[in-house]
Image (cartoon, rainbow over all chains, first blue to last red):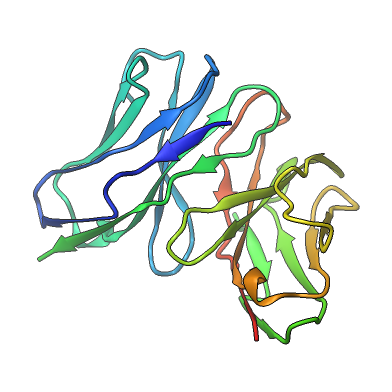
Length: 115
Length: 116
């Protein structure tokens, strides 16, 4: 079974600065996808970024980028130029290719951006 | 276009009662998922539909939980004989995936269930 670990329950950053959220996972699968989702207080989960394991290049989406280290089974999220609206819970998730399309989530990191 | 909607947004019930939670996926999305999120935790998978059929129901905790998607669109999660431990936010998600891999899942706002 796959597991996802987020070792930072809470983090804070000053507005306009950069912050990195950590995620590690455990799997015996070779083909899979990784996701970062944001959940603001409104509860709506919003996709931040996704990475296909077969791609060498790290995914980027505007101010959001990942550092994907397949051998180390690490998938960290970097947020540049942090904004107050980035304040939210961030969840790392794993999805295996083939079979069930369920996602396995970590416990989340609560990020607070301070003015 | 319209996103995933869930009703009700909040549901308070008494122990032992029956509840139904509804999910309206994004139009055209063939895949639908239910997750349960307890306080301070990440979402936990319950069941996955591909069209009308449950492709994976391995996450349902026991036989008190059941879900249907009779026409391949709207889904209902049904919980019988509710227990206090069922209190959580129930999230629904849909994706355009046809079974070839974990496509991006689009989530609804959730239903917060409280069992007194």
